Length: 418
Image 1 (tube, rainbow, N blue to C red):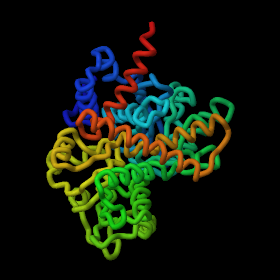
Image 2: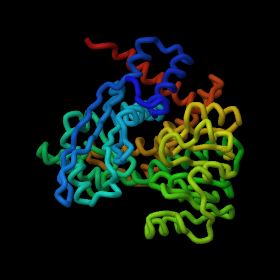
Image 3: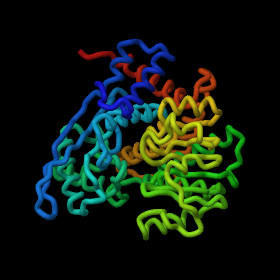
Image 4: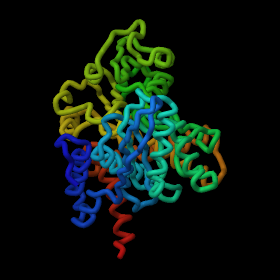
């Protein structure tokens, strides 16, 4: 599989895997097998738009690995979705699930569309047709989708209902991130941000930084970014800057993320929030702070701007926000990075909890879920940190060493059929 762009997310994912394969002396067969997705599906999604215009959208579902269990991964709706991006995200999901040691492989889905220009009716029709087209490879024991960029609990509800109608029974376990009323889990919406917060605080403890009064900047004030900001603020940290796709705001004395979130809900953006200066997304990454949380899209911290990052810790709420070249620069400068496959694994962990609850038809309290999540995130952080210290590598390399090693071990034990 060769990507079309030399800077694609798929190139980054392969570069990371190849680097780790050398470090752990991964055998050539296992290495080559892990460089390929186990299954890739491209589908056409024909629609009639509200004005009667016929359109055909393109959708993808990629399953990188089913070695350790059914595959798991979100579905994103975005005009810039590519098969290379989805392929990379599926691979990263494999490592993410392995890092926190839950019995899933990695998958990802995407539809090339602009949901901001579509009505709710159009989004529902798109979702239901996409669900039918990928139904041949998804299911509670095969592949369990979840929300991602520009998809949410409602989209998951439409998918669950569509699959249930084709099966003739209520298939609650086919997706996670559903509304609680139809089998969703308490704490799921906040899970990704909560996981980022837990691992960020563990990193601050390790680096000797007090949470109280610590300066935090968050690029991307969507679900993961806003929840991280809210929880860090409630823990005593000072949120000095946040941004969304339209731009950012900055106040060195601190922002109230609860108030900013209310403002964004009313206006559609953080731009124009009172008592704050305007900053660009690029400028936000370079603010002087204790903790930087990239919670937007891939490749935000690059070789070009990594030398200007002034944060002491970077906790990645987004997938792939730092390029390999930037990783080396940050590491050499002593900036501690909590990598995406560890930092944002709270979402897939509580998705796993949701799936387990659906299969049991027995649901847990939110306090129980949050405590179980914290336990997994803390133990996973400790395991990655020990691996980093043992191999004298950065945290991302350590997380990949741990994850790839677990998947490779499962692959060796299972063998090759036929």
